[in-house]
Length: 257
Image 1: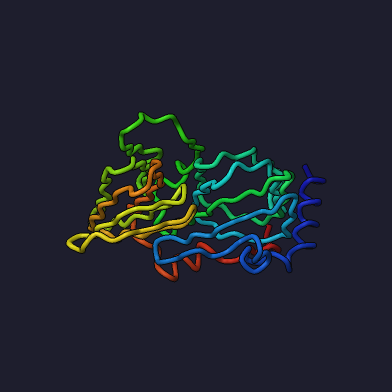
Image 2 (image 1 turned 135 degrees about the vertical axis):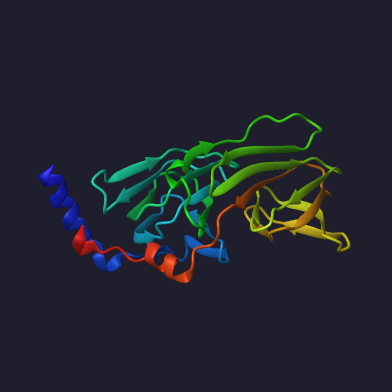
């Protein structure tokens, strides 16, 4: 155990200066897609056999929405005794959620396939945060029927899979104080009606997002020929204040480890 701790401390000292935000260290792999006071969405692409140098991530809870069938990826944690962890191959349309932890790691895509996903970071007040964990996959659904399946629900966030078949409307209604993020799991061709506004076309590419404010109603109609599939994130707690977020996302104090 002492040897393991010595090795970990050596690693921390060696990479301390490199422990920067992923968007700075590897801009070719991590790109900020959208952000507001409730959520931050980072689009990630590890190229085949790509190696990403050491970097930080905000220690906030997050969901990882997989956009393609990817191979195994190794995360070498330089600030944890358990070191390297291999993320198994992923399937498009699946997602994983995990509570917030501080992490400093290197990444190696061991596969000849790219790995593409969204990192959806929750900037809201944690409630029952340790329950935020699990993996969820696409399932067979009844043909010709819309689907609204809740995959995960706790005091902080609810995650629902939405499927709208061709020609059928699907209504997204949010509660007061609880806005929602919609993530497209395919290239979508929709007609959208917000409140009393006229219907308008809405095209969303795979992995892109649409924000629905609190206490709102959006009617979506699938104008394409294939089922339109989305993930819906309902945020049930208030956004953290700037000071609270600063405290939660402060940089690692490497020397104190």
